[in-house]
Amino acid sequence: DMRKIRKKRKLLIRLVCDAKDMKEDAGSLHQQIKLWIPTAKFKDKTGDFYQTVVIGDVIIDVKTHSQDIVSHAGPDYDLVIFNEPAPKAIYEENISRLRKGGRAALFLTPLSGASYLRDDVIRPEGPEGEVYFTEGNVWENCKDIEGTRGILAKSDIEFQIRKWKRLG
Image (cartoon, rainbow, N blue to C red; front, side, top):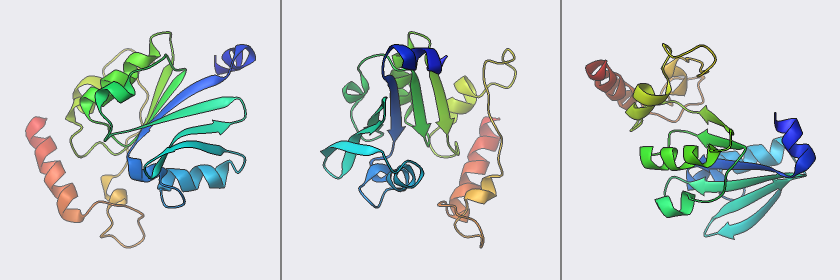
C-alpha cells in the first residue's frame, strides 16, 4: 500500500521513457507533468532531458530507452512506470527494481519491437488479478487519420499488424 510507504519515507518511483519525452518545454511528459502538477521540481538535467522530478515527498527517477543497461541498475522502487515499450533488456532490468513488492505500470501501444510484451507480460490467460490491461484501437494512434492524436504512420501500423499475425 503506497500510503503506508509514504508515512515511513519518500515514495520512490522510476519513469522509463524516451529521452525526448523529458526535454524541457518540448517533451510530452515534461509538458504534462508541468500542466498536471505545477509544483513539480525538475532536477539533474543531463544533456537535454531531466533525470529527477520531485513532487512533494515523491521522488521520480527518470531513465531513458537510449541509456545503457548499467544506468538502469540501482535501488528498489515502489513503482516503475513505462511510457511506451522499452527494449526487453531495459524492461527486465527495471522490473528487477521491484524486488520488495513494488508495482509496474505500462502505458503504451505495443507495436514496434515489443513482441516480448505480448509473449511474457500481457497474458490474459494468467491468474486473475496478476495482469491488468486495456485493449485499445490501434488506429487511434495513427497520425494519418484526421481527429486522432497519433504518432504512427498508417503504413507502419499495417506493417506491425502483418508481423503480429505471423507471430500469432
